[in-house]
Structure formats: C-alpha cells, structure tokens
Image 1 (cartoon, rainbow, N blue to C red):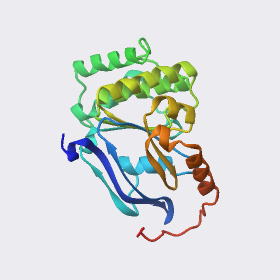
Image 2 (image 1 turned 90 degrees about the horizontal axis):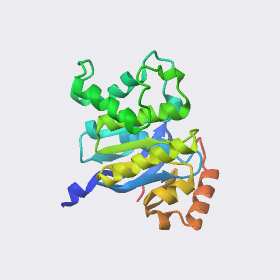
Image 3 (image 1 turned 135 degrees about the vertical axis):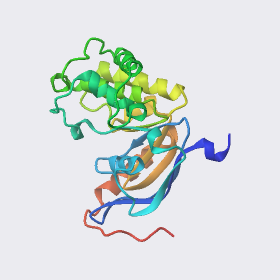
Image 4 (image 1 turned 180 degrees about the vertical axis):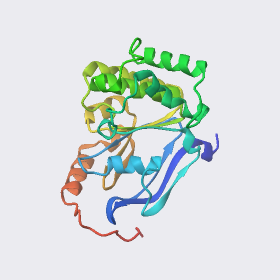
Length: 249
C-alpha cells in the first residue's frame, strides 16, 4: 500500500480559532487508514474544535487539513447537546438521513435503503422503534439511532464527538462493539472522549491535546502520567484572550 493510501487524514501545522482567539495550536500529524484513535485531553483542551475542523465545520486559521477520501466518505456524529430533538421526525426517517449519498438531499428513498435502515435499527437494538418520535427517546436510545444512521451512511471515515456521554453502561458497551466492528472492517474511526479508562481499554491510538499537541501515537505511550500532568498544566494556564500566535519555527 502506498503512503497516500495509508493516510486517511493529514494535519499540517493546524491552528483553529474562535473570533481570532486560538483554540487549537499548530497540530501536525497523520490519521492512518483503518486506525482507531481517541482524541483525549482536559476540559477545554480543544478536542471538539479539532474534530469540527477535520469534518469541515470550522476553517483553519493557519495550516491545512488533507483528506485522501472525499468528504462524502466522512460520517460525523456531533455531541448530543448540539442536536435538536424537538424536530417532528420519527426514528426510521432519522436513520434514513444516512442514505443521502445515494438518494441526494431531496431524492426519494428506495425500498432497499429502507430495508437497510431497518437492519441498522436491529443492529443497534431498536427493532420496533421505527415510528417512535425521536423526542420520546431516552438519551441512550437516541444515541443508538444516531449510530444506526452512521451504519446506513457506510462511510470509510467515522468521526464521533463524545459518543458515550450521559448514556447508560449497557448502551455504551453495545456502541463500543459497533466501533470495534468498524475498526475490524478497516474503517478509520476517531472519537473525542473524556473517559480515560475507555481510551485505554478500547482505543489503540490516542491524540492527546491541551490546545497544543501533547502526544500522538500508541495509547500506552501517549497516556503516560507525565503527559497527562503536562496536559493539565497547559490547560490551566491557557489565556482565553490570547491572539493568534505566530507559526511554529
């Protein structure tokens, strides 16, 4: 396999800012095709910001992001708090939104796509929930619906922003199994996580960040105590009013 095919996403000196205040500084590195990576760090470390930049929701202030696959091959799950569950839509139609690559934004959904959506709901343990309004679901049930939508999308790169927050242990276990299956299929999976035990137990690669890159590589090495202490110290002394910094030499 060529170096190009081995790389799913490459970050070059990436800096991301809100209103010219830097949230992520000069991050460089590579997400390999088929890798399973956690983005970890203290609260306010820029984890979700980095993920949003990778998916294209935020533009870099400096540097660039290279995708070896098209953006249609990226599946993205934002934090649950960012999703409006009051919209009047049922479970099946929510999952069918994952078929947009085939049907288009306004196209009709085929019988085959509907059948696949029902299979996805069965996979996540929600068979029989097809006509339930999403607003009636528990946090764990709704997260299962969103994973079913990702199953239908069938993307080669999957980005998850805190996918296991505020859900029960059984749902977390079931969804981690789906993540493991994606990894086994050779998909590239990246997840923002705040639970370091989950990182160590389920993710062989870790990107540790505290606005700046602390480490990126095998989890057993990156999550060393000295790196975690450094990340915490850097996060605590970060200046929210800092201007865009100069490019690294």
